[in-house]
Amino acid sequence: MQFVSTRGKEQVSLSTAITQGLAADGGLFVPVTWPAAAVAQLPAGDNLAQVAEKFLEPFARGDALAPHLAAITAEAFNFPAPLLPLRDEARLSVLELFHGPTAAFKDFGARFLAAALTRLRAGLQRPLRILVATSGDTGGAVAAAFHRRPGVQVTVLFPKGLVSPTQQQQLTCWGDNVQSLAVRGSFDDCQALVKQAFLDPALRSEFELSSANSINLGRLLPQAAYYVAASLTVQRQTGAPASFVIPSGNLGNSTACVWARRLGAPIEEIVLAHNANRTVPDYLSEGVLRMRASVPTLASAMDVGSPSNLERLSALYPDAVSLGAAVSAVSVEDNAIRARIRADHDRYGVIWCPHTATAAEAWARLPAARRERGPWVLVATAHPAKFREIVEPLIGRPVPVPVNLARLFELPAQYAEIDPTLAALRGRLAEAA
Ligand SMILES: *Cc1c(COP(=O)(O)O)cnc(C)c1O
Image (cartoon, rainbow, N blue to C red; front, side):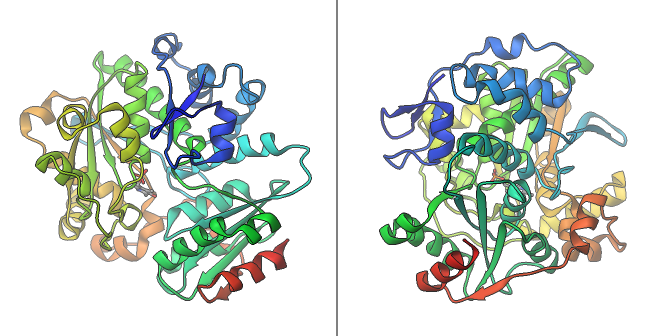
C-alpha cells in the first residue's frame, strides 16, 4: 500500500512515510486507498495487539516493515485500552487510553513509531537524533518509547518553568540516550528552535535529525487500531455502531477515528471536543477556516490554534459542509472543564483529567435525543494523576497514582538549561553524541 502527500502526487511506502515524517512538498501522508474489507474480516475477541496487527497488515503489505509487523504491534500495544461502563449510564462508556508508560494515549503511537524506526535503522552506523519540542505529554511519551533503544538519541526541549512539576518529572527522568533541555523561553521558542535546527545545513550534516511529532504517519495510523477494537466490542455488546467523543487538539487522535470508520469500523458519530481553542468548531459553524494563535487552557495538551491534522481531514472532506457531515465539534471553556470534573466525580465517582473532562462536557451538551441514541464512548486521553495540581483541589482528595507513573516520579531528574539559540542547542547535541 502506498501513501500520498495531501499537497501533491508524491507517493511513498509505509517505511518511507515513517522515516520522512513530512512529505517533501510539506504535505502530510495519507493512504491512497482504503481497504475496507480489512475490518470486516477481523475475528471477534482478539486482543488489542492482534486487532492492530491484522488491521495494519494491508498498509504494510509489500513494505520492508511487513515481516516485523507482528513484533511491532506486540511491542506498541502491550498495555490494554479497556472499555468501562459508567455508573447508571446504559448508553455511555469510557475508553481508557492511558495505561501506558506515561499514562496518555500518545504512548500507543510513540511506541509504534519507536518499534518501527528501530527496525528500519537496524545495521546503520549513524545514530538517529530525534528532536522533540514539547509543552506536555508528547515529550514524555516519545522519551519513554525510545529510551534505551539502540541507534537512536532523543533530545527533548521544554520551556523552563512553564510545565507543571508532574510534567517536568516525566520529561527529565530518563537519562541514557534521552537528553532533556530546559529552554529559557516559551514553548514557541522551543518549537522555533527545532525548526531552525532542521533548516540548518551545517547541523543537518553533523547529525542525522528526525522528528517524532504527531504528524508522523507512524504515530497516527496505529491509533486507528484502538477505535477498530473498541467499536467492534461495542457492536458485539449492543448490536449497534459506537459513537465517540474525542478530546482534540492537533486532531491526530480524531483523524485516526475518522480513518477507522472510513476503513469499515462500525462507528456512527464522531464528536471533536476542543477546549477554548475553537478553530475547528468555528470552521464548522462559520464555514470559514481561520487558523490562529493558541490560548492557554487547563487542557493544555489541546492548546492548538492551528491543528496540523486538519489537512488530513480536509483531504477526505474538503470543505466545512462535508466535514460537518462527517464530524461535529464543540468548544469547552476552562470554567466548564472545572465544573465537569467536580460534577462527574460526584455523580459517577470518576476522576477525569482536564482533557477527558472536555469530552464529558461535550457529551453532556449534546441534544438529549442524540445522547439517547448512542451507544456513546468517551475517549479518556490521560490519567488524572498527570494533572493532579489541577484536579485535586476540584475533587477535594488526592488522585491515586498508577504504578507506571509512580515509578517515573521516583527516578532522579536530570536536565540542562539552555538559551533559545541554535548555538546553545548545537553545543548540547555535540555533548550527547
Ligand atoms: C495530545 C493530547 C490530546 C490531543 O490529541 P490530538 O491528537 O493532538 O488531537 C488530548 N488529550 C491529551 C491528554 C493529550 O496528551
